[in-house]
Length: 634
Image 1 (cartoon, rainbow, N blue to C red):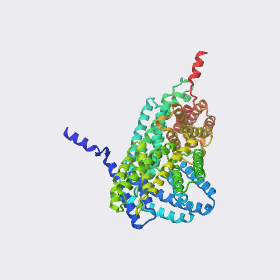
Image 2: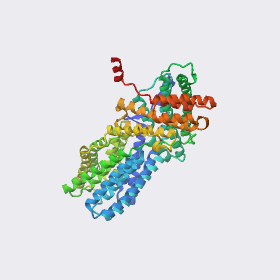
Image 3: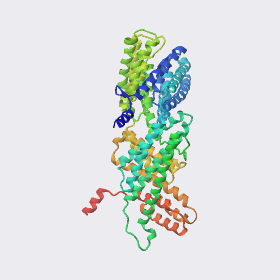
Image 4: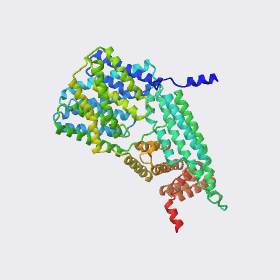
């Protein structure tokens, strides 16, 4: 008994002040990396040492691979932003109104790029907007300073990146692939349970099924960070992608088995048993069970390759689905919002408003990476006054005129470590609030050597920081961002348009398994628009029905192309025509004809029959409760 108690106690993580030891280690790494970045920036006498501290705050991620991947994209986006700042300032510096219009268009283009990307690639697109804001907009009245300001910012960011990399390496920041493997394994158990229920004729509800697809596809951006983790990182990333793609394929097979198991068996035709639908369904069930077992083995193989850092059995691609219309609408709204705020400043005639306008572009750019830009702006509205109070307390109560680096390190410790602990919380609101407060505190404090203690500068900076978030929120009230319901409707319309095509559409170069993952990524975006728990049952049912139909069509096309040569060519062509008409009865009849042709030619047709039976079930019209009641009354 004592041994079991000791082992249970050893399994529990160490907790101090409500946070586990891993969170404290992460917060300590952030503080040390920030001190190292500031010390090197002061020693090199960089023009903007606070940019190196901000870089550390932005790269504050719990694992090594995530931080390094984001650092690489930050350097790339900074270079692009500096080049764009030089080009914009050089061509439009003498035209104030046109310059503001061009800056607004650039903000919109960056937001559009964010909508077409995901993960840290989307962050890099938003950083292109941020870099132009902090360089070109702040130097709008002195265009000759754009180039030296851009070089100074690039140098400070490089120092911050190197500081994060060095501290993570020395203090052995954890790798991400063990946690990712555990998450994929948990998802595999859920997909396996779905298949077990399907064998008993039980299928999960549409919202539950859509939520499972969301949980699988949402891991896609995390896979990219594995490539920067170690020398075998790209191999591990390929294994993780293969595991996710096979999980979606196993999920769709489980849905197929549930539909076949729940399908009522029609009366047998003793005169022509080869065309008996019950026999065809039995063949299909047997094939689907075998295919599920094979897919589960492939998922386990990919998981083993992920843990061992070896190549998977096959390197699947995990394509991302993005709606150009949604991205374009978001970009247009960002351009209009920025332009309206710029017009407000022009009409107000306030001096030195460049800082506020640049922060407006920063908030718009960073907010575009959030599923809900308005919620992000609301968090920014809450974070800015808190950050100003913290920065003022540090500057005028803690430091109070001192310039020693040791006192700077001691004074920053409670603020940086405390906010870094908030970042580790699983709840999105306090985590986002902690990160934004940390970033804005450093921006307002602006550590420098020597430190400036001019109260007028501090008050103006604090006022503009709070005003920037308030103006962005006001602009979003006048011109609301794309609502979650509208995004869901647009994505659902795109699903239906793709189903109406006879060809594979824009994904014709992908394998059926890869296209299924692309559809799962689209469902993940639909659920993220309003939150996985807030999806409407009717929308979830329509979405999953479209997913089943698209998957069945792809399987049918692939299998018919495989058997559509030689003696089976005629039956395969009839099946294609039935699929083109989306006629469930004709599809079922074509499956029987293909079974007969295969039996005469002694050729295997089980896979094609299973795909056709599944397509017949997927395209069977749903029985309307209203229609049933009318029939009963008549």
